[in-house]
Length: 152
Picture (cartoon, rainbow, N blue to C red):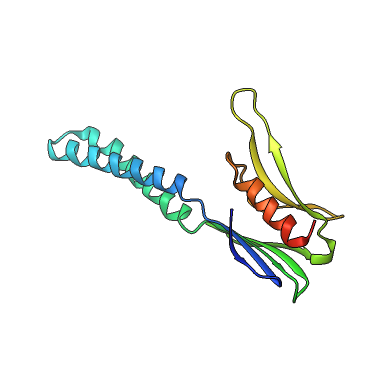
């Protein structure tokens, strides 16, 4: 999640995951290429990689628009999180005065590294900023930006 706009009155952070989409696209192109080569030589096995390529292309299509946007606005007094994905648009918000700050939520697996996501803390709920947990510094960077903007 990256800061896309930061003014004294408004903070906007956006998360546009592209790594998964690019990996799906590369796998889809590879599957379609293998399928085309098998079809050219007349093998009935071409159906398998061609079908896999079509499924992967569909996944890229539905993954492409996915993003999250977080807006904290002093003029409206609102904090809003918007997720856009294949399921449509989902919004969650809270009055800016109710936001106690932001924190990093962490999940750990015995097999892999810790995964994080940023959340807004309110008296009523913890509002997640992204649907997924992520490796790397992005969640902590988002939390630092939000807390600095809020003066906490």
